[in-house]
Length: 150
Ligand code: RB5
Image (cartoon, rainbow, N blue to C red; front, side):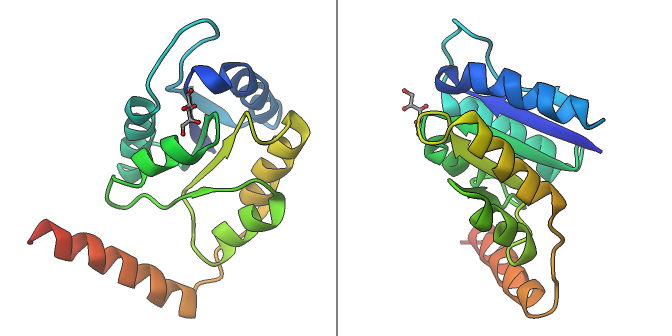
């Protein structure tokens, strides 16, 4: 499995810990984020990870900023991205089971590292349930298609 990871300056330390956590599980990680002491703008990072995920260069993405909100908003501008910002593992699990979220996001100023790892695990270990949920995802895709022609 290969995942993209991305963060702004608010989440650089957390990104390092999460990247290490993933690599210990044997997951390849492509880092689009900024390093500690660098400053960067979350929309730039969210777009880059969103494009890598939408192009299927990776199997999914993990995004972090102060709240997880700004960086997920940016990623969700890319067609095909379903980025879910979560502050606890139940939402993370459901974001995969029901929404087939291909990016999970969280905030380094909102959750601690242990909760962040639980969120990552819940998202990674869950399976999309398909069925009625696929129909709703198809409806989201249709919004993207309609927007292209408006
Ligand atoms: C950066 O200070 C902060 O605004 C950003 O990390 C994020 O929380 C935005 O949603």
